[in-house]
Length: 216
Image (cartoon, rainbow, N blue to C red; front, side, top):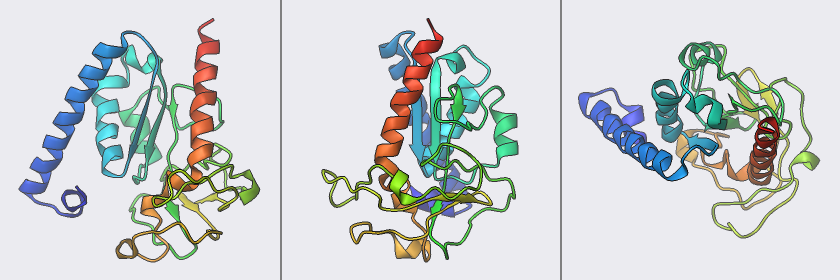
């Protein structure tokens, strides 16, 4: 879990290896069930770390890359340069209907602290699916869902803009969205998916449609 990511020790490395081995086996099972159909890969935090390895070892540079619609390795501090080396042929996407690419972000509030040493952290704005620094207003946020109210969809909860590798949110306009204070002030680690839930859901469908159109 999180403890293995935060500590440097043999036991932490072993825990991560065990977790990845399980993911690797699950991917084998998934491929056996899906045949030659297209697929989407998604992860969060530690899951995105393992997903990064899965793409490096199993997908990038193989026929599977042409079946992968998009990858969402969200909430991990990915150096764009490093991923370009690890994932040849799988670029950072810059438009909502681009395929065979990846999209990622780390959501912070105005005072959130960056947990990264690299100065080229990849950032996608899930309200526009661009990588520029434009502020996208919250009226473009078509639906958020909190961890406590999963059946409730809230519109226009927050805006977003990419700022030096971070997805900055000016303000959360709802009291339903809790975050973990121990992660640091304005660190929305647990909210990366929920704040942009409906935009992400719509985008996945949009990219699948673009993939299917490319096959005809």
